[in-house]
Image (tube, rainbow, N blue to C red; front, top):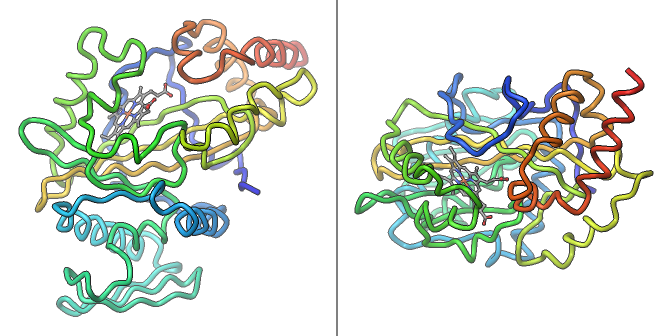
Length: 316
Ligand code: HEM
């Protein structure tokens, strides 16, 4: 079972506008934390570790020149875990000799920072098993950004294996409208100017039939059919709002960008407990152009969702 979260901690994805279009919606991140530990921590960690054990080639990719960036990512995340969640994690560093303790899982790991012979896993693969986020490293060279490493267990309908080594624009190429007014170029330029110590974040949203977190493209046959199983009677429980909190950190030494993705899910039934949320979702979905609804995989059941929201609005 995938954990479904509490409405209080759910990151509301919409702004003031009742019209949704693709844009550069990244804003400065304050406080500057790359990770968040929620009440589903243990369940999601177990799910991640199971996926990594069974499908490592699908969930992990790394090119050899990214070793320094992977150590930097580990450095940033372990330090933040112990700084922001001192009751859950401890980090003792004595020059290059580090001891990390995860008090939630009861694990303790000693290693020599920078010496990958002292860790059983690559640093990115190790640190990713202690956080709920998926971790992507975009390396900057020749005026572009490339997806050269990542640990990805909960992709929203994409494939790490397929996208490995691609540039930012190649990754986003199939998104309809993403090239209009050179949006892809403007976002790329923005990303390449991100400075160390000044991180950014954005939210991305979608609707999902079912509550699976591991919706990788490789296993579309396992979860894609759920879109046909939405009915008038199950829509409130079965359809979920899926929100990704995405954070962007410049790694100063390797000059890579660490992109962390925290996926949250809430059934519509819970989401609409807030009347304002119900009203705005209904307005946005009604207006959403076909090409965005299609891309997000909502088209098959959009009408059923709209009818449900309408009915609920009538009760308020
Ligand atoms: C730099 C790290 C980033 C990576 C690795 C990344 C990766 C991806 C991937 C793999 C997809 C799915 C594409 C597909 O259908 O195959 C996607 C979708 C998308 N990305 Fe990014 N992205 C990044 C940053 C950004 C930023 C900074 C923005 C905007 C400011 C952005 C905007 C979008 C949008 C609008 C979509 C479509 C999502 C939807 O409609 O559900 N991405 N991204």
